[in-house]
Image (cartoon, rainbow, N blue to C red):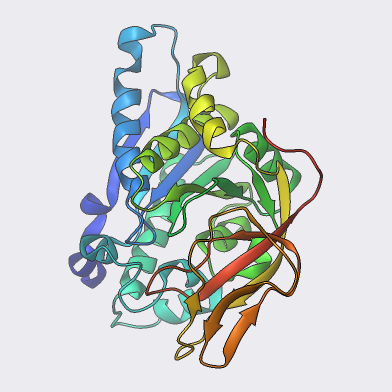
Length: 322
């Protein structure tokens, strides 16, 4: 098939599959849907190995369901770029998929998109799960706090809290076409809950550790492993990087970048830095860009590719992670 030869096929996309024959949820964990975010891929390789040897030191360990860990944008991962032609994590739109399925020739991220959807649908057809859970692992260009992006459903918010990282609502209103949009809209299964975890700065080696910790906490929260078998160090790893940040926030503003904007973020911002209304944040071809509201900045744009300049969130309470 054309798409398999172009981007690498199922063998290269799969990081690992783990199960022990006990029925439970079907869990997908994804790394590298942006090719310059490699921490998730490295973490999932370690995770599969950890699960495979867990019984050696823990005879009572039991895994329920099936875990499928896979890579996102194979071509971009090979080149270390966010994407090749188009941002893959803005392409999961039903209308685009419907058009691509009618085409014989697909290029770049179009091939990646079809392969990922095929992998998910074929895995569902093979396992026949009652519940599906998805965790999409990411990193950011800025350093600072970690966080979990949810689709605002009570279940997703609770999973985010249980993962021991700040929870952000409303993010899926500020961006479109992510894999979370596609899966949470019941396009592949009526009982699917998908979340995103942002683990820290791209090149920070500890971002790998935080991805592992988030994945283990996620497996515990969705019932694949018992909470008693999750080592406290996984909670500690996330807590140490989240301490002092709001427990629960909501997105209030997204600054979009258009082609030719010549967007330049003011240097030095980190995730969860407090900003004031009217504060100078960036410049583009039209001049200075000021914050329209007070809040906390997330994912300031310090990379060549991408269509999001920065995000502003406001805490929903005074509670912080302690």
